[in-house]
Length: 402
Image 1 (cartoon, one colour):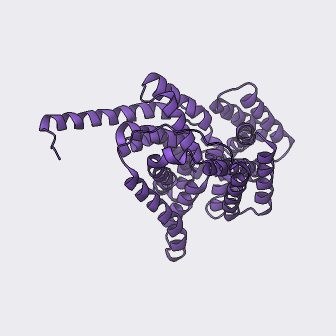
Image 2 (image 1 turned 90 degrees about the vertical axis):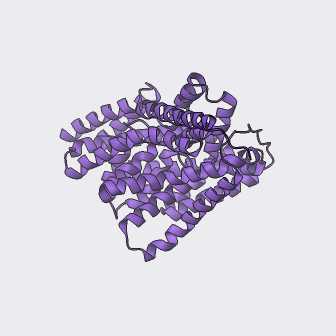
Image 3 (image 1 turned 120 degrees about the horizontal axis):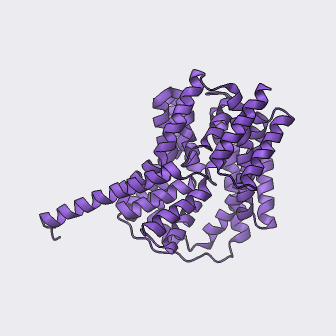
């Protein structure tokens, strides 16, 4: 092996640090300005990374998006992590996540502190709960169009919703996801899978296998160890890691899973839904709801644990899958199972729209009227989500006062 001379090695270190700073700067800009949810984030990323900075081309970007839709977890955050890893290795992926996530983590942590201190009027909380109805309905409409385009997948979605409503437990959701994957495989396994783009990485298949091993060990080991470890910090880590590891369909689908884990043991349903409503008003990924919940559960320490645990599966899954994606992408059976799982995700979100979102937020005709107005602002007037949140919170406060 030929050693690099000191000058070349020095230039390499400087270039790497410059890339890291460039990644952090670009991702922080996106973290401060990316309103609108996962679909909008994908558009923001394309403008910034493909068109403006030219870090990759459209074909490679589309393949990364396909990868992150294939994996459980927050798709937009995983796209950002993947681009950071292509640009600056594993550290680049971390910096890309940090810049994109930190602004909304801080904002939701502060909001939770205000809730805990009683500084936020209950009337405004009612408005935030109402806006959650419109936001989830809007997400359901968009996801339904893209993920249930035929009768078979519509039936899968309806069946999943019925099952979740009849058996409202976290384990039922896991079973539904597995079953819908099997159904999708049986229905669509003969369809041709798309070709893949080979991605240039600074790590290989051994690192990927190690990441998968850690991912699986934590997913299985944490629930098994929890009964023997009496620690609120451990319990928080287990809850958020498990949810972050198994949720398909992005931030909106995480709502019912988290609600069943933290309500009523850690907080009230009203406080939970209010946090979800507030998460719509900040830029960045919806998974930063974990910061709000962690603050209510265990203060600043809870924020750190919840956020790390929530996003750790995404890092491990991206590191574990990127080296193998060129092969996985061409397997029709895997793509078929994913079609069934995505349809099941739509059903889970449909069930969540009723319980806990609608049942917690809508207390009468006036609340429902405000929710309809918020839905209209999102779908037909196409106002930015943060504007809809502010308007709806104001309407909710006025209705509560009157």
